Image 1: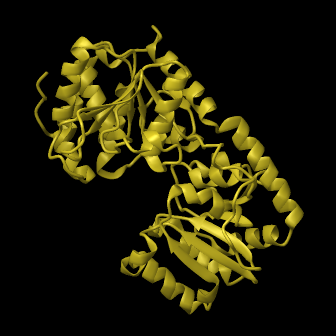
Image 2 (image 1 turned 90 degrees about the vertical axis):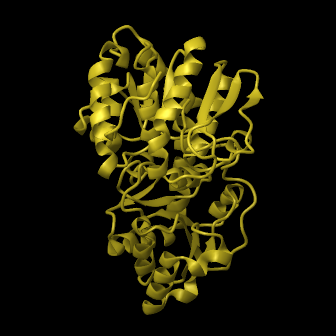
Image 3 (image 1 turned 30 degrees about the vertical axis):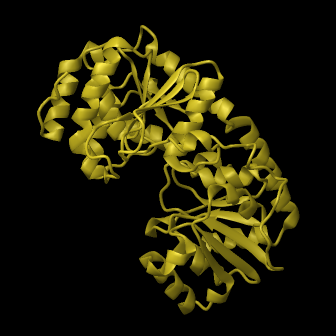
Length: 404
């Protein structure tokens, strides 16, 4: 595993860790449980971190010295990718892995540069394409990998438009800790009002403003907004202030509670306290919150974008609505909040869907199948045409070849 930017060290001991680092950690743990040796390479971002961490027999984390030992932005990481690749070249000269799984395009670039003189097959997970200035590198990394894992059907289409062969793409969603996210268990205290929950990073594209406007057409309902900075720092967040002003203009501020970022371990209780969980994002690579809600037996109203359109089955586990459409969002909320029996039916179906499709055991098995496809003799790896792929990478990055 290569995870340049997202250090999964703490997440390896925390089954509930969120985000990409949590995904890498959970997948690594599950692959190890299934009997495979897993080594995770991540950039050293703190000089106090040890060179290696042996999590268990056959599961190891390696902190790679590449750039200053502090947190770096993505654009600050890129100049040190060559150094990271040289480290992998040296390590793999004596300890050749059967397959390399790279997470995010920065990790994929390291993998392509490191494996160009070997026959090591690379499997790439973008977890959603970044696009913009990164698109050319994403295209070359995707084309140079022996296999690509997409999280949704929408991402498959995006990869195909980049020129990645569909025959090399496997669709494998993120998983859910179904031991933590269950229908039964503690629930956060609530008022007598119906409750809607949204978990967000408080970014403008998260669509919380659409939900605030929709609330004006949904009576006797409170909205809980989890995420963003910790509650004590919310006042300094520009998006929080914008949403508060919007709520004041629409006279719904008294029905909205911003609770800030909470530990992920507290999310199951928050979800269980809600009648409906809303995922109003205008674009989403993968909708983990929707799956966590479904695992808890809570129905979901979600934008029909990205991975949300795959995970939420319309009229079966929840309702899908057009993104950036407060009127449609309000209509869907009224339909569910006014029908308790329907909420229970959708919630039960959602729980069943997660139990069948989104457990970490199922996800790991699907990833293993992607690995098996990548190491097969019919796959053309980077080694079959390294000079062409690498020369194009050099042109895109505008820098010299790293030694090794």
